Image 1 (cartoon, rainbow, N blue to C red):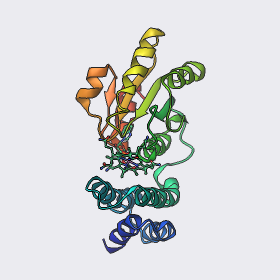
Image 2 (image 1 turned 90 degrees about the vertical axis):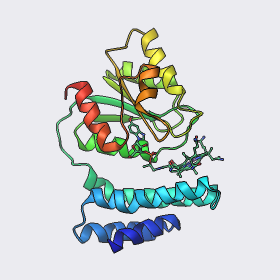
Image 3 (image 1 turned 45 degrees about the horizontal axis):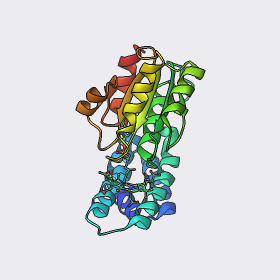
Image 4 (image 1 turned 90 degrees about the horizontal axis):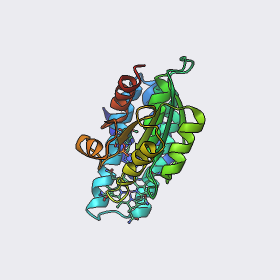
Amino acid sequence: MEILKRTADALQQGEHQQVATLVAEALGAGIPAGDVLQQGLLAGMNVVGEQFRLREIFLPDVLMAAKAMYAGLDVLKPHLASEGVPSRGKIVIGTVKGDLHDIGKNLVGIMLKGAGFEVIDLGHDVAPEAFVDTAAREGATLIGMSALLTTTMTRMRDVVQLLRERGLSGKVRTIVGGAPVNADFAREIGADDYACDAATAVDRVKALLGA
Ligand code: B1M
């Protein structure tokens, strides 16, 4: 669809105001929020990632694209998350220590909230102790971890290990995700599950918590 292509292009150019306007227009035209996300915002961000990998663009360009992504997400958020659903359980989420990438984690949080979970979002660069202490203090039954770097995904293992040391394995379940993470890695570190995207994360969390 033309408007979604324009949204993706504007995101690549880092035009945050234009992205917000185009997202609002697309929603106003009756395009489902999920399509605006996938074919507009995420399509644009995928191109940015590839161009960054090939060194065709540089970090400031990626930052501008991320700002544009957030401008679009702000408009989209109320349409992705339905309000007023009774709580299905309490969840702690965050991006692991050393990692500043939070767009995917935020999307997962929005979708989980929309599905009726109470989400405590610790943000990015979250230490293992912060994940586990918060879950214990708040009586959360699941920790969701995100990592986008091959150098930081290993920190997920520390959280699983800490839960074990504190006798919380099984009581507090774990799910991991992010571009470099996969199901084999999740198994290897002893996490309870893995999800490839935000929609799958909701399904897997529901299954893990029997919610
Ligand atoms: Co960076 N970055 N970045 N970056 N960045 C990547 C990840 C990279 C793949 C780019 C590349 O080289 N092609 C590369 C990693 C290489 C590697 O480790 N193998 C990289 C690098 C190298 C870096 C720096 C080291 C660059 C530098 O400084 N030289 C640096 C690291 C900083 C740090 O974290 N310490 C860095 C910095 C940045 C910015 C700050 C500029 C910015 C982040 C801004 C922000 O998040 N606020 C940024 C961005 C935007 C990207 C790319 C382009 C896009 C990431 C993104 O937001 N994608 C990325 C390239 C790429 O991934 N294609 C890249 C959109 C998002 C919706 O997808 O996060 O995958 P994603 O989330 C998905 C799924 O993975 C899943 O669901 C989400 C929705 O479907 N998911 C979960 C995610 N978490 C989940 C948790 C779950 C379940 C599912 O359960 C709990």
